[in-house]
Length: 441
Image (tube, rainbow, N blue to C red; front, side, top):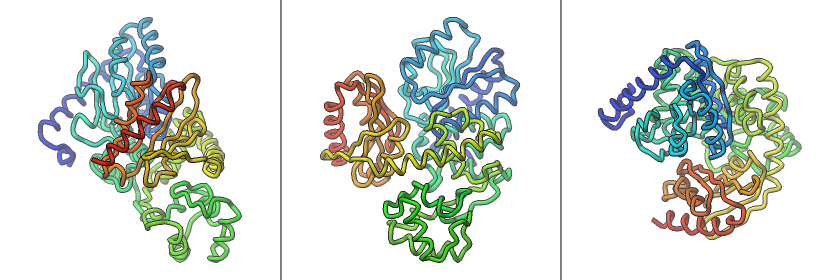
């Protein structure tokens, strides 16, 4: 039952109250609804859930996909609002809670559906409705993603089929090892209504609709340095007498491969995953999350939305984009030069790839990926569960950027920032010191 997710009855009642307010505002709004969402898997699934809901409710809508909810983006929306007054309802997905003051300054008629720590821990702020997991004591880094928050609104209208997109978004945000909290509730609901048709414990390379050798070559979860090109993988599979062109493993091949791969990974969980078979043209939620991520990171988020909505042409483009994107990642991993300070590591990389590269390189120190953007450096910081358990909170660490005229925030395990280029060295030194203090707590 959902009530068990909440820490107390008061939190449950607050949740029901704001959900009713949000659904009533959506139902009663007669003008354009502007949906603004993030470009990663969780953001794209969030956007897809909301626009599919609005379409079914016969609402007029327009979707924008952004990399970052910057001051410039908010100011542009403010100008749009000035011209249209109260005729536009803004729905922010997977963003907004950290920037609520900027949204307030422009007087936007807005709903925020987010799972990042909020700047203001209230449900209603001068007419803005905020559905954020943290307000109810639900951990947005582990127990629900933004697409899950969006689904909680959609299910109020009976759209339970959209649960599969919430599950896909949570996988994209690395909340699936294992699913817990509200994510688990959503999975159980999807199973109840048969939108999940199976959950299989399987080797990760069976998730992709690709020949086995390609599945291994393009997989970065896990990334195995010793098997990072086609020739090495082909030789590896030939020694095991496994057909290179199979698109899935039988039990015998699965066991042979598992035993052989244990020489390269720390534990079974690195190569064995729970596969969620969903009612979608891409019937594996893990693979769907990978396709959406590739689209977002390659700057074709609109194609990702089309994939989520099961458009055949978009699916074809996404599969091609996925291969191209993974090749770039593998090549960049080979070329990445790591710089070390006392408590952090950092590297300079390409736009839209730094976050993933950083997450793949994390071991015993958090890793920061950095790229230039005009007069700023944008930073993606990544930790892991072990570091978080030792006290790491990258959401707080990235807020140090504010001291240098930038901005930042996110989750304890994954966060981002933007810093003026002239202050990067000072920023990194202060971050290094701050991480050291957190990990010594």
